[in-house]
Image (tube, rainbow, N blue to C red; front, side):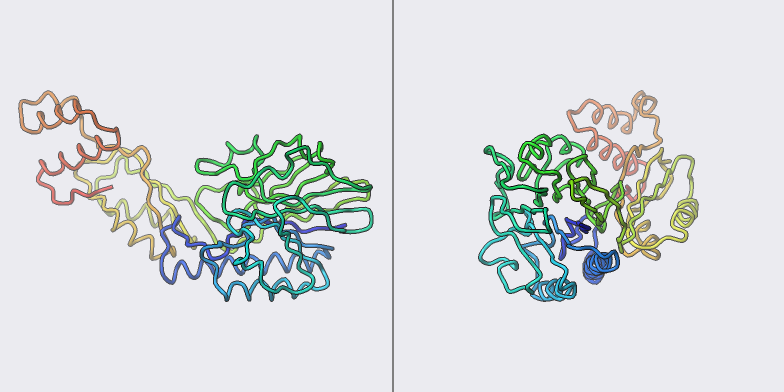
Length: 368
């Protein structure tokens, strides 16, 4: 049996992570829809027998009626191919949920907080469950859960495999946490999962990853997985990339720069031939005479990209603080006072940067 599995599309996301607003954010949300269209097309063209969604298909608090109609049309277009959906913590199932409305007969939405079985194919049973609240969903495999009946059993749910949690980065909550060993202990040959955006192909589980970018710095091949399940439960997987949004990481090292034109030239070279969304990391030793204005940099990059985020990492003023601190001057006293104050390091650098520029007679104090 051939399955296309995807998860974590997050339709109707606000796109605050890339500082996109207005028409730009709207176009990015349209790109998420185009990504789903590509998933549906893959399902059709690959000859898949079913489409699985591991949750977080949309944002519960932001989803529109139009998005609901779009989803119904897309999934209905696959009929008679069945679509199985296991709601997650962002698209949780409840009486007021989009999932509680009418869907085409080929769409099956799991509505219970415990795993429930459904016949998938001769000799293969699918067990799926739903988050029925935005938080505090228990382990679907906990409490001694064990499948019943002969044949091959596979699972579909939205949950946090504990050993892979740290790899997801800060801020990822362990919703419906479980251990890898519990998959086999429950009698499953494989678990098709959602929740983690960083992809993983475990021996007994698959996280497809978000199919369209949802933040900067993403890695791994993310997108729908075409999985073929044999009669004995063995599995073959093939990953596909269907992302519509282009996301780029740019770098600007200002060490040695003494003019604004050098910055413009470096940015032009960095952005050449690119489009979409960009994050610029600014680093290096900043000459006191250099006018490095964030708004000016953003304005130039927005000639190429739809949205831009600027991030400072390892950016330092090229002042010799030890030498200035020895001066019997107002400037020297200022440096001594700031270095002796109990300030967080980022705040200390900001105060020194602005204060020394002010004492140099500069009026462009709010540099990067």
